[in-house]
Length: 243
Image (cartoon, rainbow, N blue to C red):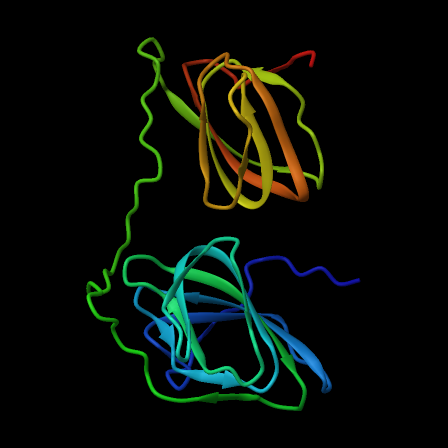
């Protein structure tokens, strides 16, 4: 067994493949044919592949951001974190970022023969009505006030991982909590509200002392960032409740 730890080396994508700034991390390099190659590709706003086709099947799994994909003769479609795109062998297509946000996806490609089996063509260019790419993208995903009596002096940030199908149990926090899902998904329920599934890119807010009835990782587990605004001398605590 070999375990590689981040950060991993990144290479700048060739202009022969992608127009605009993009970076590639090799996750699984190709082996003797037939083999499978997996790359993590990050597209800056406005960057996208040229029109191209692969000899083998390709699967794209969006891991961050919002992007675009189009097959020849089909509409341009938005793809978001968690979406999976299956591209048939020989199907001409392109994919990349929109002009207002970056996008990262895993590119999983079946290589029936040795060497690069992709055939690249012309640039995609700007789509009708698209705004010019912005050098910086800022999107407000949550604007939440805090209790009037909370004199925040510091914010503690924790990265928390719950194993597949792990259950946190009903609980309350001694202060407000903000969270953002990084990977995986979780069944989330506050009090008697309807439960919902949170996925990568989703954010949540828990008012102080509210009962969190469910925070149950789904089959792939969940990793999330939790932000705890704290008063002077306060520590973030969690009280478990009986179901």
